[in-house]
Image 1: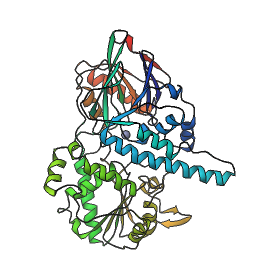
Image 2: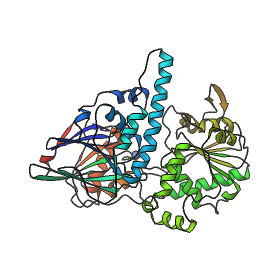
Image 3: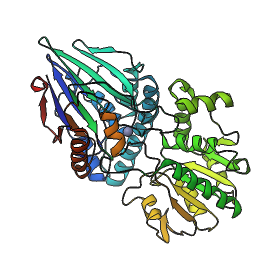
Image 4: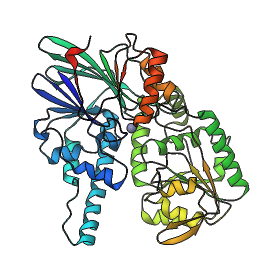
Length: 462
Ligand SMILES: [Zn+2]
């Protein structure tokens, strides 16, 4: 029995690990590589395995960098089950439908541009096939993935339905336990429960995205947002919040709801202007059994979610365009999170030139994105081939990361009393090197940084 590290070894996206035992092969995640065009081009490369011979997939959560190559796996012959947590299955369905739609649109555009037929990475039909093969499981309930492999999902507190996975492999009369962290959330994240403790394991595959970072205090961030809202009201302006459809949009809505009276939000019109974020929010509002204590209490007191009586869900393009005519008193949450596309672009175009308006950046902005230019203080940006003056105030607030920081990661690891060896995945090399030293020092862990293609023979584990 062995694990081969394939994707997200020494990088942040494309999570995928191959587990082989007793003539069977199971994948842990099958994520998309995200980043530059060149990086994303690697998504079309052949897998280092025969997709038709994969027996099953165990999926940690519904982010594209963990589930985004599943349709490609189907395209290449996979026809087994995909196990994920129940809420995760619903989010994956929303996400893959959107990703397949974009892939088809992109292929059409490139075909037109090059005059050659460009095929999409995968199609809506292949996305739908994945959704049809998904098996929704509950947290903390052990199940059989294939004969010889049992699994149990534990809450990872990262996004709704996110899991750390306990795996028990049996081969030739020997049994080994593997823990795959998935992406781990911060402790005390709103709405979600804390990352669950796992008592022991023979080995841990662990994410390390923010292994070298300490996050800013969340309460500080909340105060900052409150102050911006007060300023916007006094100056009679609008507030734009670019946010990712899954996770961040729901967290922002929840935060606004929690401080509704304190921040005088009844004086604003609040818009969630993204069909995908609306669908995702409905999943978040449905699975109340997955909430932490505070969200459970607030949702019960309110008679359900959302907590905002003046929230308008804007689905149609016309509704979205109508928001652009509002000069004052609007709070607009829209995608994309890095302002690379989506409806936020239109809102930015209409609002950036006026100094009474505010943009609150709540998420990571990659180099080269429009969001990054705003963060970096550009006085003018190009939107739809026009120069747009930036006179609105741009606020960057930290502290809302869906990933745990150095301390959170170590705290989760330390729940394992036997201090198993750690293989760091899902992180840039620099962060991993830092975190390796930190975890070795703080928790006495033996830490490895596997390269892509490296294999771990599970029989050699003590
Ligand atoms: Zn994630």
